[in-house]
Length: 228
Image (cartoon, rainbow, N blue to C red; front, top):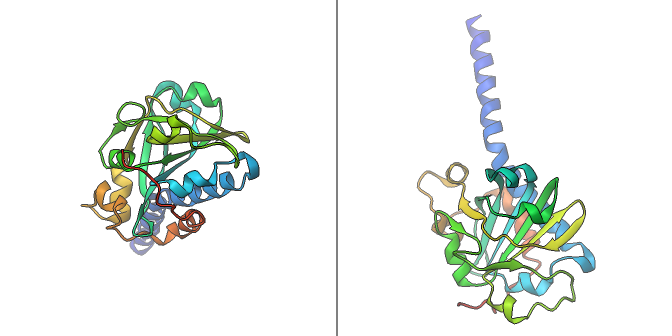
Protein backbone atom coordinates (compact mmCIF):
# COMPACT_ATOMS: atom_id res chain seq x y z
CA UNK A 1 0.00 0.00 0.00
CA UNK A 2 2.81 2.37 0.86
CA UNK A 3 4.48 1.61 -2.45
CA UNK A 4 1.23 2.17 -4.32
CA UNK A 5 0.59 5.43 -2.51
CA UNK A 6 4.13 6.60 -3.24
CA UNK A 7 3.75 5.74 -6.93
CA UNK A 8 0.48 7.64 -7.12
CA UNK A 9 2.13 10.63 -5.45
CA UNK A 10 5.06 10.54 -7.90
CA UNK A 11 2.76 10.29 -10.91
CA UNK A 12 0.53 13.04 -9.57
CA UNK A 13 3.52 15.30 -8.98
CA UNK A 14 4.87 14.64 -12.49
CA UNK A 15 1.45 15.39 -13.99
CA UNK A 16 1.21 18.62 -11.99
CA UNK A 17 4.68 19.72 -13.08
CA UNK A 18 3.85 19.02 -16.72
CA UNK A 19 0.60 20.96 -16.43
CA UNK A 20 2.41 23.82 -14.72
CA UNK A 21 4.99 24.18 -17.51
CA UNK A 22 2.63 23.51 -20.42
CA UNK A 23 0.85 26.90 -20.49
CA UNK A 24 4.13 28.78 -20.87
CA UNK A 25 5.12 26.64 -23.86
CA UNK A 26 1.60 26.96 -25.18
CA UNK A 27 1.78 30.78 -25.29
CA UNK A 28 4.95 30.62 -27.42
CA UNK A 29 3.57 27.96 -29.77
CA UNK A 30 0.23 29.69 -30.20
CA UNK A 31 1.91 33.04 -30.81
CA UNK A 32 3.96 31.51 -33.64
CA UNK A 33 0.80 30.00 -35.17
CA UNK A 34 -1.08 33.30 -34.94
CA UNK A 35 1.75 35.22 -36.62
CA UNK A 36 1.91 32.65 -39.41
CA UNK A 37 -1.85 32.80 -40.03
CA UNK A 38 -1.99 36.60 -39.97
CA UNK A 39 0.95 37.04 -42.31
CA UNK A 40 -0.48 34.45 -44.72
CA UNK A 41 -3.75 36.36 -45.01
CA UNK A 42 -2.69 37.38 -48.54
CA UNK A 43 -3.74 40.95 -49.35
CA UNK A 44 -5.59 41.47 -46.04
CA UNK A 45 -2.67 41.10 -43.64
CA UNK A 46 -0.05 43.38 -42.12
CA UNK A 47 2.12 45.29 -44.60
CA UNK A 48 5.36 43.34 -44.66
CA UNK A 49 7.51 46.47 -44.59
CA UNK A 50 6.21 47.23 -41.10
CA UNK A 51 7.53 43.94 -39.76
CA UNK A 52 10.81 44.58 -41.54
CA UNK A 53 11.07 47.90 -39.70
CA UNK A 54 9.83 46.58 -36.34
CA UNK A 55 11.99 46.93 -33.25
CA UNK A 56 9.86 44.41 -31.32
CA UNK A 57 6.81 42.25 -32.02
CA UNK A 58 4.12 41.19 -29.53
CA UNK A 59 1.47 38.52 -30.05
CA UNK A 60 -1.42 37.86 -27.65
CA UNK A 61 -3.47 34.82 -28.76
CA UNK A 62 -7.04 34.07 -27.74
CA UNK A 63 -8.07 37.10 -25.74
CA UNK A 64 -11.45 36.75 -24.06
CA UNK A 65 -14.07 39.48 -24.31
CA UNK A 66 -15.28 38.91 -20.74
CA UNK A 67 -11.91 40.09 -19.53
CA UNK A 68 -12.30 43.34 -21.41
CA UNK A 69 -15.69 44.00 -19.88
CA UNK A 70 -14.67 43.59 -16.25
CA UNK A 71 -11.18 45.01 -16.70
CA UNK A 72 -9.51 41.95 -15.17
CA UNK A 73 -6.56 40.02 -16.55
CA UNK A 74 -7.66 39.04 -20.01
CA UNK A 75 -4.73 38.10 -22.18
CA UNK A 76 -1.28 36.56 -22.15
CA UNK A 77 1.27 36.15 -24.91
CA UNK A 78 4.85 36.95 -25.87
CA UNK A 79 7.09 39.85 -26.88
CA UNK A 80 10.45 39.56 -28.62
CA UNK A 81 12.85 42.29 -29.83
CA UNK A 82 15.57 42.47 -32.46
CA UNK A 83 19.07 41.80 -31.14
CA UNK A 84 22.35 41.15 -32.96
CA UNK A 85 20.72 40.39 -36.29
CA UNK A 86 18.15 38.05 -34.75
CA UNK A 87 15.49 38.05 -32.04
CA UNK A 88 15.58 37.96 -28.26
CA UNK A 89 14.14 35.18 -26.15
CA UNK A 90 10.35 35.57 -25.90
CA UNK A 91 9.18 37.40 -22.81
CA UNK A 92 5.80 36.24 -21.48
CA UNK A 93 3.54 39.27 -20.98
CA UNK A 94 0.03 40.09 -19.81
CA UNK A 95 -2.29 42.73 -21.24
CA UNK A 96 -5.08 44.12 -19.06
CA UNK A 97 -7.87 46.67 -18.94
CA UNK A 98 -8.49 49.44 -21.44
CA UNK A 99 -11.38 50.06 -23.82
CA UNK A 100 -10.34 47.54 -26.45
CA UNK A 101 -13.40 45.34 -25.82
CA UNK A 102 -15.73 47.85 -27.46
CA UNK A 103 -13.75 47.64 -30.68
CA UNK A 104 -13.13 43.96 -31.24
CA UNK A 105 -16.51 42.39 -30.47
CA UNK A 106 -17.34 39.09 -28.81
CA UNK A 107 -15.49 35.82 -28.74
CA UNK A 108 -11.80 35.04 -28.82
CA UNK A 109 -9.49 37.55 -30.44
CA UNK A 110 -5.85 37.46 -31.46
CA UNK A 111 -3.84 40.67 -31.03
CA UNK A 112 -0.60 41.55 -32.81
CA UNK A 113 1.33 44.71 -31.98
CA UNK A 114 4.47 46.06 -33.60
CA UNK A 115 6.89 48.27 -31.69
CA UNK A 116 8.35 50.65 -34.24
CA UNK A 117 11.17 52.41 -32.40
CA UNK A 118 13.57 52.31 -29.47
CA UNK A 119 11.34 54.53 -27.36
CA UNK A 120 8.57 51.96 -27.55
CA UNK A 121 11.05 49.17 -26.84
CA UNK A 122 12.27 50.96 -23.72
CA UNK A 123 8.71 51.02 -22.37
CA UNK A 124 8.66 47.22 -22.56
CA UNK A 125 11.48 47.13 -20.01
CA UNK A 126 9.21 48.61 -17.34
CA UNK A 127 7.32 46.55 -14.77
CA UNK A 128 4.12 48.02 -16.23
CA UNK A 129 3.18 50.65 -18.78
CA UNK A 130 -0.01 52.05 -20.28
CA UNK A 131 -0.54 51.92 -24.01
CA UNK A 132 -1.48 55.32 -25.35
CA UNK A 133 -0.23 56.99 -22.18
CA UNK A 134 3.38 55.95 -21.64
CA UNK A 135 3.74 54.95 -25.30
CA UNK A 136 1.76 56.19 -28.31
CA UNK A 137 -0.29 53.47 -30.00
CA UNK A 138 -2.61 53.47 -32.98
CA UNK A 139 -4.41 51.10 -35.31
CA UNK A 140 -2.06 49.77 -37.96
CA UNK A 141 -2.80 49.82 -41.69
CA UNK A 142 -4.19 46.66 -43.27
CA UNK A 143 -3.33 45.23 -46.67
CA UNK A 144 -0.10 44.36 -48.43
CA UNK A 145 -0.26 47.50 -50.56
CA UNK A 146 -1.42 49.82 -47.74
CA UNK A 147 0.49 53.05 -47.36
CA UNK A 148 2.37 52.67 -44.09
CA UNK A 149 4.44 55.85 -44.28
CA UNK A 150 1.90 58.42 -43.09
CA UNK A 151 3.13 61.03 -40.63
CA UNK A 152 1.02 59.58 -37.81
CA UNK A 153 2.38 56.07 -38.27
CA UNK A 154 5.93 57.26 -38.57
CA UNK A 155 5.55 58.85 -35.13
CA UNK A 156 3.57 56.08 -33.43
CA UNK A 157 5.57 53.97 -31.00
CA UNK A 158 3.27 50.96 -31.44
CA UNK A 159 0.91 49.79 -34.20
CA UNK A 160 -1.79 47.28 -33.24
CA UNK A 161 -4.02 44.74 -34.99
CA UNK A 162 -6.75 42.27 -34.04
CA UNK A 163 -8.27 39.19 -35.65
CA UNK A 164 -11.68 38.00 -34.51
CA UNK A 165 -13.95 35.48 -36.25
CA UNK A 166 -11.94 35.76 -39.44
CA UNK A 167 -12.05 39.57 -39.51
CA UNK A 168 -8.65 41.25 -39.44
CA UNK A 169 -8.28 44.97 -38.69
CA UNK A 170 -6.13 47.60 -37.08
CA UNK A 171 -7.27 48.47 -33.55
CA UNK A 172 -6.52 50.93 -30.80
CA UNK A 173 -5.17 49.64 -27.48
CA UNK A 174 -5.61 52.97 -25.71
CA UNK A 175 -5.68 52.57 -21.93
CA UNK A 176 -4.63 48.93 -21.83
CA UNK A 177 -1.65 48.04 -19.65
CA UNK A 178 1.16 45.69 -20.57
CA UNK A 179 3.39 44.00 -18.00
CA UNK A 180 5.73 41.01 -17.75
CA UNK A 181 4.29 37.78 -16.35
CA UNK A 182 7.03 37.37 -13.77
CA UNK A 183 5.99 33.90 -12.62
CA UNK A 184 6.11 32.43 -16.13
CA UNK A 185 9.35 34.22 -17.01
CA UNK A 186 11.06 32.95 -13.85
CA UNK A 187 9.90 29.42 -14.60
CA UNK A 188 11.31 29.67 -18.14
CA UNK A 189 14.55 31.50 -17.50
CA UNK A 190 15.41 31.47 -13.79
CA UNK A 191 14.55 33.32 -10.61
CA UNK A 192 16.64 36.44 -11.18
CA UNK A 193 15.84 37.15 -14.82
CA UNK A 194 14.64 40.65 -15.75
CA UNK A 195 12.74 42.03 -18.73
CA UNK A 196 15.87 43.91 -19.77
CA UNK A 197 17.92 40.71 -19.85
CA UNK A 198 15.30 38.83 -21.85
CA UNK A 199 14.62 41.52 -24.45
CA UNK A 200 18.28 42.57 -24.81
CA UNK A 201 19.25 39.04 -25.81
CA UNK A 202 21.11 38.06 -22.63
CA UNK A 203 18.93 34.99 -22.01
CA UNK A 204 19.07 31.71 -23.94
CA UNK A 205 15.73 31.18 -25.73
CA UNK A 206 13.75 28.00 -25.08
CA UNK A 207 13.67 25.30 -27.75
CA UNK A 208 9.94 25.88 -28.16
CA UNK A 209 10.62 29.31 -29.71
CA UNK A 210 12.08 27.92 -32.93
CA UNK A 211 8.86 28.18 -34.93
CA UNK A 212 8.31 31.75 -33.73
CA UNK A 213 11.79 32.69 -34.95
CA UNK A 214 11.18 30.93 -38.25
CA UNK A 215 8.15 33.13 -38.83
CA UNK A 216 9.86 36.36 -37.77
CA UNK A 217 12.99 35.68 -39.81
CA UNK A 218 10.91 35.83 -42.96
CA UNK A 219 10.99 39.62 -42.46
CA UNK A 220 14.65 40.68 -42.08
CA UNK A 221 15.34 44.11 -40.65
CA UNK A 222 15.61 47.07 -42.98
CA UNK A 223 17.42 48.93 -40.18
CA UNK A 224 15.04 51.83 -40.50
CA UNK A 225 13.38 51.75 -37.08
CA UNK A 226 13.80 55.26 -35.78
CA UNK A 227 14.75 56.44 -32.31
CA UNK A 228 12.43 59.18 -31.20
